[in-house]
Length: 574
Image (cartoon, rainbow, N blue to C red):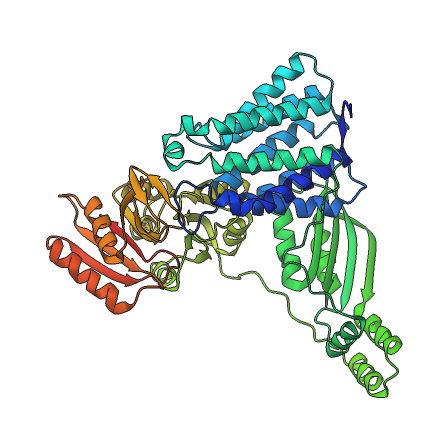
């Protein structure tokens, strides 16, 4: 093969192949995480990010053009970005697609510039870029791409193969750049995820037979026999939303990601089976609803409508049942159902109360911790945290639901801060401020120190200052053998993880938790807070609290039920 360019159709296949390859390797990539914790999530976060884009790309089909493809890749990955690795991956795609958006075909010089733009965009998204990570691997590939382009390389296969090989070499060197990787005996997991994407894309370029199908959210439905399908159809005589409504909006103003998400949220409030695909100056819309007029009125705010089509699905359903069965009882039931007027459901109405000045969103985990945040005045809880990082779209959706002009978000996890910052950039109708809380205790401290009478800037400064006084330790278990911070860890051991590394390791939970607290307490410490998880009995937690009270008589000891999974204890010292 000696191709000299890549068109939109080929790039679409390559992107889907890269996404599928990453998905197939996500568990292996998860295991490369330095800390051997059960919520190792780099592979999962990167996969959920790229599959969000892959679903949009797959909807384009074969009749794909470069601009539509770039929009699907960039927008889909941006909204679906989860965790630091996912956000960085989405920024790589964002920079890459910005460069190629106006091209009909991609040549080697264009690709080299696109790789360079991708790296530049991703580095800008990270406040303190660290070498030895996915950023370094991406930069290595971009540097090699530029070298090949300047040498006059015209063989696309050689170009792609060389860039990927060099990226793999850079990945192999990441342990030399980050001692923690070398000590753990792994390469950077984010960089490995990027290699998986590039390798899958190259397989598609080579023409290998690949499964490029992408399942919608919710997974694949079980296959049924024709008779089972008929029985199910007969059983579901009632259709919740009766009118299949389709149209195209000819936009008369910019339709950004935030507006698109707001429109989709509105459609979800009045119906289901929603498809909303924005493509340059048009938006294709499909929705099942009981009041097509509501969808049409909302759409008219964005532009003129064309290709309007409304079908009564209840009538179509009854006709299908007549054809499928000669059973008189079925026909009678169908006729009775058809004669009934549809049950019109009122759409969800926006809050009528005036916007308050301030609101709070907190990412949380566990029933007890959720209730603590609510009792402190947090308006909206995003459940996830350690075990499942919320996406940028999840955060934007939460912002929409908070009835306030200014919204503060507490990520409460260092792996969610980038996604929160990305959401802040995309928020247009409200002011979203990210308080960079890295742990649940920091989030609790931040909201406690909020003073309604102060300005936004004063509150932001105070909260950020106060979270700096909080040390956090979390007790969980190891999922593999490794060595970190000169501590030998065996699979099944309990670990106390602090703000900057492993604080304690052992085979007894209470002992490990106690040693973790000991590493955090100083002469200035005044308060020790203990939140026990769903796998710890109340009497066990109380006994541990009493131990800490005896050991640190000058400190106030607070014990509360957190209910968090995976982490037996979350503790803080202030």
